[in-house]
Length: 144
Image (cartoon, rainbow, N blue to C red; front, side, top):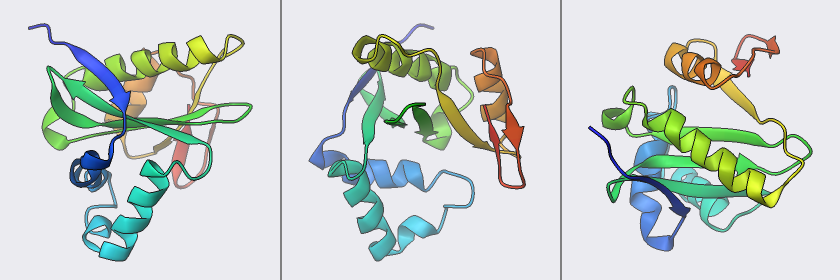
């Protein structure tokens, strides 16, 4: 079954869904229940503090999660999908859309960096299928 996948700019009304998706990240399940932390994370995402651009991932108009890119010499990307949308190919399609979006803005772009927890096998395999290479590891994450 084919579906329409789109990235759109984060909007004010996305707050609750954005925070719900963030709580799906391993180790973050309870962090977003803390209102102070949730407000901080939303502030960073929505008010674009720093050099991070955040995009909502929608599949057939339904919120699936978000992805972002941290500007810099070597852009760092991140993706977070609601549990029910994981392992369906949505993540890799969203990363490809993000690549196209950023590459249009930065013609010299040759690669992204993604930090992935060592135990997040699904994400590691997704980035490897997309051509990612493990370039260093430490106790907390794999850098692809």
